[in-house]
Length: 439
Image 1 (cartoon, rainbow, N blue to C red):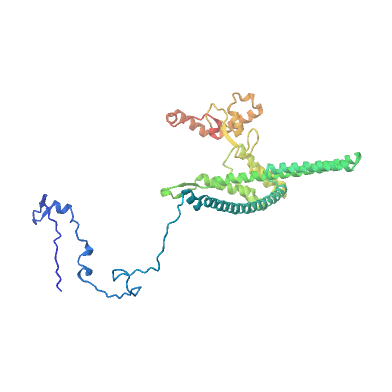
Image 2 (image 1 turned 90 degrees about the vertical axis):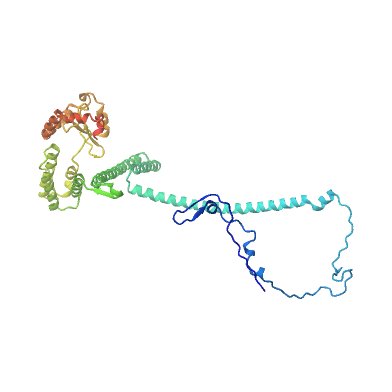
């Protein structure tokens, strides 16, 4: 067998469409060859150079016919048996109505609707049963939560009645005492005669007075504890360092001189408020506090030094600590409002006494926030304040001028210089117009 192999030239014969030639190598570059590819071949790739095309495989198979007998047809190589033949005859004519009645489309549609309704009812019953079971479980859980809430509320009410800490708790105690009083009066009126009723009412009145006294004592203790906690929160807030986000968002803290001073005051206040200190440690603390105040000269410092000397004298004479509680409370709080004698540091504001003159240590008054707002609208102080109060304020202002005499001289020179007017001529300068601007 001879195998003939033909090599086809796949290059494309195209006309010259222009190009360019390399100056050194002399290679020519044509536009047609660079822009288009070869054409598709007429003969598929899988039909070339394959084994089935070059060789032929032969197979031998033996067959056996289904019927081995002579044929009944004119052809000898074909025989068709008549075992499976069917005889078909004409049927009677069937009209369209007969055909529709035979198909029974309405009956089948009715059957589909019946089974679909049954399916919907079964699904509705199943969903309703699940919803009912969920509803019963929710009701049971809600009832348990309601009983638990009532139980907790009852326990909470008992704790609030035993250890009251808010105004609502004390109102509840007053209401409970009033109910008890009415019930006792009703019981006395029902079982005693008129003479015995008076005696029972007197005893009931004495019990009510004792109960009111106990409630007022509890209220006073709660108020004292709240004020102490408020002072401690105030001192703790000022002891915290200044924080900000520095370079690359890194948190930075800075402890200023003000923070150090606040921490020193906080430590001093904690030592003064300590109730379990010995006589020696208490005396040492008071002496240290007195030495730290010897460079300050004002009325408040003089009063504080007087109280310290008084406590040291009483402790040296063997006076018990329970008799010194009031004196120690006076030492702890030495700042108060000039009008209402309010010593709450959160409510006090140090504003201008005369609103037409700029703030200074000799033109200020210590008032609460509400008093400061009312003081701002006063035109004539003599029509509002008493003469004794004004004399007290003027005396304090003269003492401030004497204490800050160097600041008075500095202010005088500063106003006469051009720097004061340079500050006032700035665009961002705003003169204070209200007393709470200095709060």
